[in-house]
Image 1 (cartoon, rainbow, N blue to C red):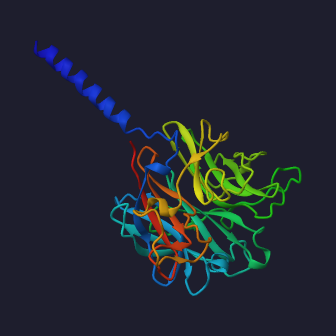
Image 2 (cartoon, rainbow, N blue to C red):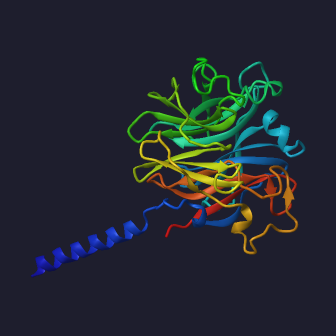
Image 3 (tube, rainbow, N blue to C red):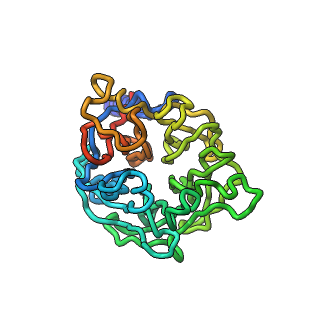
Length: 354
């Protein structure tokens, strides 16, 4: 009798845990836009515009963000193209407050591919290294076609960071004139790096196809490359999208991008899904405009528009992932400072699963 009681108790506990786990499984069939809860500012760095804000949990249990910044005495444009650098911020919890820790990468100022504007960082972890991908350019007079993607690695989130290969550059436009994105007007930029669950590495990026910014994919067997670009774009969009973030959750692959011209909502976000990380179908809505997350459904009267018009939109979405690779928080900068500050800031939103 005692053994039967123990057996049924074990079955009961197993069923309870199965139901609980099932209830916590992220379901992205309708996107993530209505799951988001606006928390507030993640990063505000006095004296600097802040852009991008790529998060990761560190071995110290803290949340680390790698963000682009440049002096707010310089306008957003051309500031990000010329003076942007990557800074490291740390907080005890995802909601912050995040405090500046150290400077990670800065433009060389020399005759190199990364002379100016170290920008749009993406931080990920492999088995052996923390991996930071970013963009840069060799001079504003050649922008935007001279944008390239670089990589730096470190054993610690506190550095030191070492550029891979000869000079850190891992991706540039294809040299083959028959290629779909040969001689793109915006180069290759805005990396979304993803270690593949079965090995190897995926590098998603924005480039140009028939005059429209869309997503491409390059694949490498080894971390430092070479990264081989696929011969076709991986998203089917006829209007501009950009700023993808890639993650793999529950055996599916996802890209979160901006929705620049309104595939669903102009200025909102898109969530693309795929079974293999290569073939992406029609997207769902990833996030709304900022005002939709505010209590009165409108921007405060004292807001300040620094960039991106007056719609009040999120840009360059980046996600904090749990141990299973599923997102828990969205971090996004904006050209709109809803609190009226003299510089751009990065916001944090929590994802509340049903």
